[in-house]
Length: 273
Ligand SMILES: [Zn+2]
Ligand SMILES: [Zn+2]
Image 1: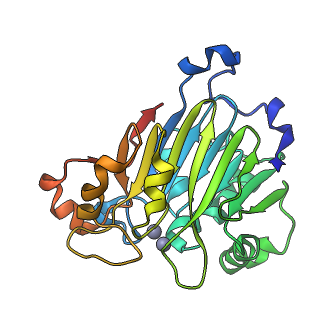
Image 2: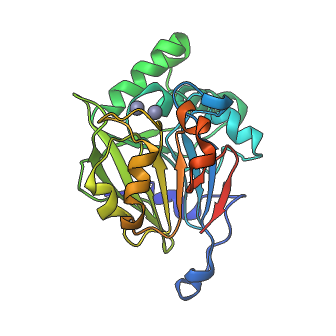
């Protein structure tokens, strides 16, 4: 399935570099900005989960926590280029920022072209419920742009414009589906764990990726539905990614930061792939 086919002539890409012929693609950078690297409690005053991926052919947000619009403005990003928002799961620290983008696209930087929202089953109804809960009056009126929902099936590739997404289920919630994504765009690949307990699927899908954004909530605490640093360190050599960056960082991890050998994400971190 290909979403937003009109993105090829999208005029709103001031922060993405111009497209180049495919034979030059190895030199083209995909930029990943860590907008928010905190956990649900904003540990160490870090923003909620969100990552801005800018590629020559598309721009997307991986997750959209409540502080995402703030973080984009903090880092000097326009919201215009965003083609799609890809949600790992429907916890507030991962999708609670969407209504502020709906407002921004209505009043602040008006938008007309469609916005695609990818997420696990149930995303469309939950996003509408969230918007209605936060802005009941506005949500009763149509948005000035089209929302296109793609409810991802674990294990089944989906395409948003030039971006290939492979969602896969990860252990985080008991009844609802939480997803990690392997994202491929313009010759680069990113694995994003979302929120996840330990699963061998992270090892499998990290192979050959340029960047693995891996959640790291805990240090001493070990649970089945989040990751802890010792577990990541035990498996570090098995990951097949070129660069591993820990994010969704909890206070236990900050308290032990001198013992951590892997790269810790920070709000505003920019990585070029
Ligand atoms: Zn979370
Ligand atoms: Zn969560």
